[in-house]
Image (cartoon, rainbow, N blue to C red; front, side, top):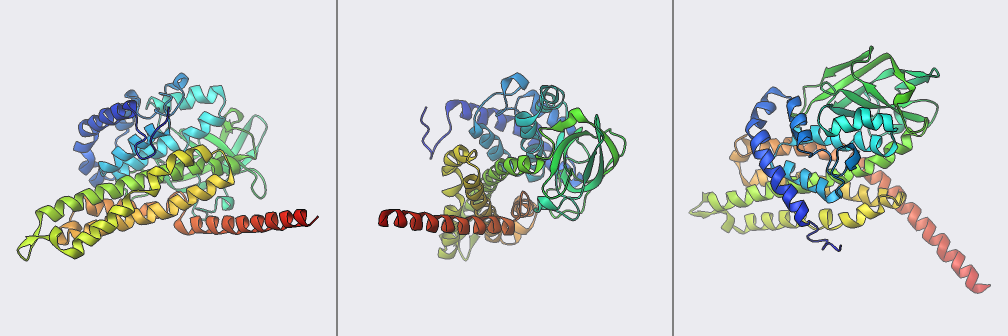
Length: 400
């Protein structure tokens, strides 16, 4: 069925949106302030999400999913962002769209039944561990090792800034199994002897998201917990991270829309110098600028982008462009919305202070903006080089 790219949501998507919105108002919104202050989220939220099927919207039905398209994930991401619960959204998103797609696409049947299905039901909490104290966006620089002992591997190393690290039941760990880009992925149960997690609390934002430093000291992991083929982990991660960045774009867009809506409301309520501040040209221009920042590139391009996710380098270039542009602009929109609120925006009452703290991470997580620019610049240079080679070869063929 053809979907208008400007309105790609079907009746099924709209029903999902209404259902999830009601779930948010009942099970999440009343507790956000408490979780923000306590700097953690309840594990019970994962169970409730799983029971309602919200984790599995894009996953196969045989493992408890709904087998819907990527737009269903967009619905969930948008509603979480509009609820202004960035920390919790980060934990839920990191559970669903970081480790689980790897198990779904590469895992054995045993791994899917043991880890994927319970995670979609919310019975087990998942995490993905890539970043280390000395390696972040540079995945090739990781130092955590996995030594092959035949029936099992021995893992040693540490990971940093791992979402869900202290509440996870299992973690997909990226390890080095050889020189260069020889890396492998393992499912590590958090009750494994030698595994330890320490909470990271001193964060600017995402307060209700569990963040941890992990330590692996002679952790014995059975060979059956190896995901896919040994030594191919780097390429698995590079492919998986494109979907992660795409969801980040959706979250960024929806967060900007939340901030824009709050600013629009405020300009109608607040008066200064005898009239609504929305009647001042400087404020109207701010609103106009934020309006065109919010829409256009993010959602209109997703149908095309999802089709090219399987086209290798081209997908990397387009998604990297979207990640760099949207996440930077999302922060700008939230910042401007806070400015429009003046002193009240700086207070916690209107939610923009929290949104600003949480949105700041978007330009850092899943690859910094600087790394996105580096990827894009290299690929553009390669495109120009290939184009010149093509033109030169065609000219030579015409002369002959």
